[in-house]
Picture: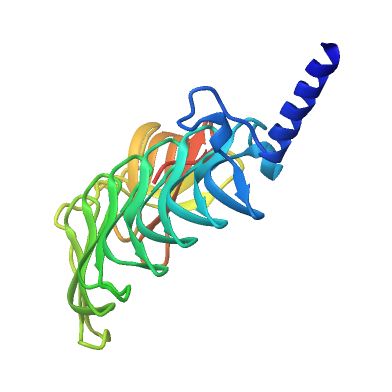
Length: 290
């Protein structure tokens, strides 16, 4: 009897390693129908665990991704996960290639991007989001993967940042760039070939209360020349400062001309928000959510 029990345990172990994985309780597939191979090729429903890929960022029992194979090619809906267990993406595959609806997510669980892929190009409507959940971009692609129609970029606060039109992937006609408060920042005009014909900068209707230049220091961000409109220096306490383009630059508590607790906004060469540096007790602690 003991001999039979040992044989049973040995066969069970061999079955486990042959499947190269294990099943968590409550998964939607039966234990004996997952991670199968036919003629050396993956077939049917598979669950890929971290121990199968030797990934140090995940716990060995964590699910990395799951979906179905046909002759070792991904088919249908596949789901992939972050180390924290939140879903990373949901992608439809056909013959091993992404083809169909897809969604990608931020590690915090918020939607990052959603659209449709076909032959490695975007087709139809595409939406991208800021990590806080607000819409970041909205555009439409034709069957060849070129944008057509209105393209919109948005600030984190939901305000439109840039609006323009494309024809066969090329800017055409008028483009308008806005300040975060909705005032028009500039107007640009393109010809049918996408060449810039005219750029018209606009005066901000609702000017910033404060203006400043920034110098990095060991403790905090020092705001040199920070003045109110009446020419007086900003005193200690809460303030918002703005750059020469009248975009918000610093937002938080100041002491001795330095940002002690708050955010420092960094822009790229085109004036688009690139990142937000966060300071606490005069020290840089990381980047904020765009």
